[in-house]
Amino acid sequence: MSLASERQLLRIVLLDTDPGASVQLSRRLMSLRSNPYELVQADSWSSARQLLAEGEFKAILARPSFLLEDWDSPVPVIHLASEPEFDQNPHQVDDSIWDQASAGELIRCLKYAIERHDLQSAISHASSYDALTGVCNRQMVQDRLTLGMRRALRTNQPLAVLFIDLDNFRHVNDTLGHGAGDVIIQEVVTRLRRVLRNTDTVGRMGGDEFAVIVEDYARASNLLHIAQKLTSEMAEPFFVETESLLLGCSIGIATYPEAGQTVDSLMLHANMAMLQAKGQRGCHYHFYDDRINLQANSLIEFETALRQALRRNQFELHYQPRVNLSTGKIVGLEGLIRWRHPERGLLGPNEFIPLAEETGLIVPMGYWVIARACHDLAQLQKRKMPPIHIAVNVSFRQFQDSQLLPTVKRLLEKTTIDPRWLEFELTETAVMQNPDQVLMTMQGMAGLGVRFSLDDFGTGFSSFMHLQRLPIDLLKIDRSFVKGIDSSGSDRQLVHAMIDLGHSLDLEVVAEGVEHRQQLDSLRQMGCDQVQGFFISPAMPFEELCYFLDAYRMGREDQKVIGESL
Ligand SMILES: [Mg+2]
Figure: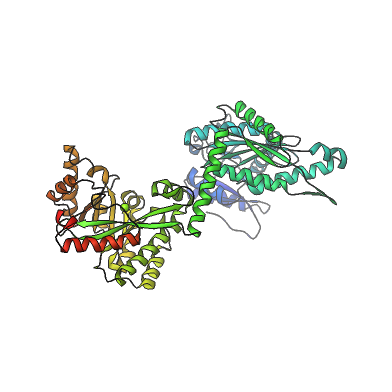
């Protein structure tokens, strides 16, 4: 609660569970015309923390029952005692006052606690930060690095230390004077801050030497991006009065834990890497660990190539047929993406999908796949082929994209295909990550007329409740189970159980990865509805597929070739 006033009052958090006591205290303060404070009550540390995070508060007045918690408060904490006598301040508080003290005493107590706290922070700031630039000093960088390394170890996240040294800086000081030198040092910090995130630590190690700690950069290529941005920022001319100066810089990079397990060894190695970079004129960076350098470079190259592949139309959608076991007819196709890499040839999804997932490229790539499948489905319909389902795989990332529903709708309208024949394959993991949101999107899409299958069934953790709730028509049993049905009794039992489970939920069951006749026969015996795999055909380009579909149909009509065997 708070008592409002036209005057801008300094706000104090009152940690107290009793609203009555807080009203009383507020009234007492307000009775003094010169009172500068306003009390805002919080009944727990977590709501106090929230208040502090949201607005400016000067201090916390806390009841004794709240003083047990070991919390590092950014503002002074004053113990609000219910007894007039207290021998000494409880642990971690800045001052104590009786809750029946007069308004004047209370105001004085708050004022001194706030002033003392401000003074202490100013002193500790001066001993931890560089006076000229306001960034951390050497000691503080080391402290932050110690904490950062602990965090990195705990969360299994990478951490890197960058040592940055200006070239020719002494020359500036000698010819233009120290004032000009200071201007440049400040400008360097501005440029570092421009490239780095707020959570990264920037420190001045002395003279023209800086250190940067970068945490959680996820991939080596991100670190390389940072190093590249830093060097290009530093390569810009510096302006001092009327002079424009080009200063080179050298950056040495050491990553934890590869380049050292202690603060000292990391700093030493960052410094050594920096000296290596000094060997070259202009702005350069050097990794202490060459492997990181290579890895980052090749990842960046691969990522760039992947982006270009979308623009340059290097992706292809190949199709693998699915056969109905009781009619022997091809009833569906699964579209599988391939990348025709200019140097490395045709790449399968395993080689680029993980990177696409990581970089978010999976979303535009997924739309390309859907558009391609719709286009090819329209082609099949134009060629008067008997209708079959075309299924595309959708990643969880894409399922979270707000554009999915409108895009699919637009594509259906544009290609005028019958939506009944379009199918989306979702994996169990995708479904389980955010079941409610997935359900909503699926319902929206099902409303368009398309249908869904659950892919890689058995490899994730679907709950039966979700299986029942979601608008799914098919279960696709993962190849890893199908593989062993003829050699392992337990795999056989498992597959049989999955088929029964699917049927009990009114789902059609498809077995993936069928490679031998024996597997096909076993699956038929178990009542499996459809099969997909090399035994029928590997995935093939669209043109080839059209021939295949024709030949397969003719073969069946003549009771020959594959038709008979199925
Ligand atoms: Mg699939």
